[in-house]
Length: 190
Image (cartoon, rainbow, N blue to C red):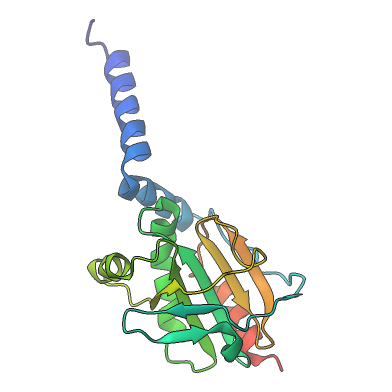
C-alpha cells in the first residue's frame, strides 16, 4: 500500500471515527462543541401541562436523605436522568452545572440528578472529578412512564403544582438565557 495523501487522510479519518465511537469522553467532547455553537437548544415554549401523581416517587442520596416528589409541591423541580457512561449526558453536564449554580441557593427550585445506574459512589466521584456541584440521587421507587422511559438523558421540569411543564429526551444545552427565563417564569407563577 502506498502512503499517499489520500490514504493517510482516510486512515486518520477512520481512526478519528473509531475514537469518537469507542471513547465516551471523545464523543462527549464533540457533542459539547456542537452545543456551544448552537445545536441542541431545548425548546422552552409552553407545553401541555400533564398532571402526574408524584406522591411516592422517591430518590435518595449518598447520605441516605430521601426526597419524595409529592412533598415538593410549591417548588419548581428540575429532574434529570443520566448515567456516567452516557456521552450525551456527559456533554450536557457542564451546561446543567452552570444552570444549577444560578439556582442552587433558591429555596423555590429543586434539582435532582438521578443516576440511572443507581451507583452513587461512582456518580458522586464522577461529579467530584469534574468539579460539578450537582446533587446526585438514585431512584428508590417506580417511576411512571410519563416521566421516564429509559432514554438517557431525560430532563423533566415540574411546575409548582407538580405538573410536567417541560420534558426533553436527549442532549440539550440548559445554560442559555431562554431556559433561565423559563425557570424564573415557572417560579413566579402562582
